[in-house]
Length: 63
Image (tube, rainbow, N blue to C red; front, side):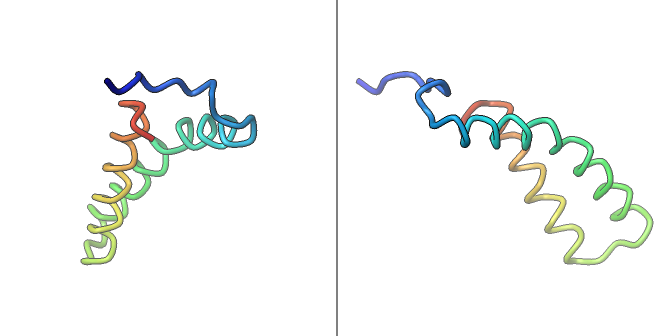
């Protein structure tokens, strides 16, 4: 059986990086959403989808 994910088994620098990325991803997604609403381009839309996917992964503790 696969063991559960334990972030405390990660190295200290990786835990800190993950913590800061988890805190900053929502404001970045909000800013990108405003950009997509004001000036919609294909690149901005794909970047927003990618950031939302990263946000989902961070908050489900998959990353």
